[in-house]
Length: 280
Image 1 (cartoon, helix red, strand yellow):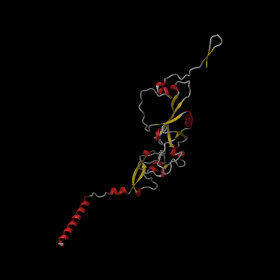
Image 2 (cartoon, one colour):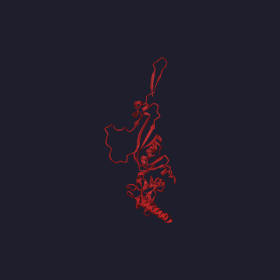
Image 3 (cartoon, helix red, strand yellow):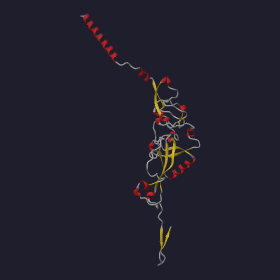
Image 4 (cartoon, one colour):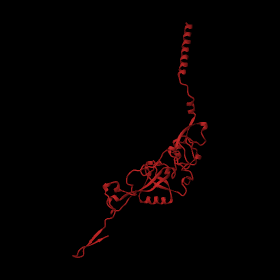
């Protein structure tokens, strides 16, 4: 009896062992690639070739996984804080796509000397106040090229309604060099919150700087982003756009009366004589 029980136990143990070996043999072997990926670190790199003086935009930064032993000293890990700190930084030297972005390769907006370094020879930096609408809802980044448009309302009751509001472009193709929280105020360390911009700093020559200051007193300034493409735009058979766009040009309902003021007329009666008419 005991012998029979022992035989059954040995057979049961053999079956369990066989099943265990069979289960492990059916499992796919753990690849060396998976082990390597676990030992790699995600680092911020240049997504494409960058030229000196360029201002980093979000699409200039990408991620690359490198073995920990090959990660250069000072490399930035892929975090939201690290990415935000790089936006708007000036590239100091030529960089190739996939190259790790190190602190010595860029000059951040909050560092001393950034504004002087990023300006071209003889150029000036002037700040334009914007809001969520005039600043194109936060879609402008350092390095973009924009036009500056002035919209003003003329308080002159003698003018027709269609000639009391006007828009005109006061500057064309100027470069944005900073957004307020990246230069004037500085990014809050450890903060990932991006607040709506209230100022945009642009690169202009001395004459353009004066035009901006005068235009800012006349009315509301808006920024219009220009295309990054350098290819010529196909010509469209249409009348050239006027230098000034009046309200009546946009809405015919306001009429297109002449801008000449209507003269004031006074009739003066002296006794029973004929009235004299005076114009002024």
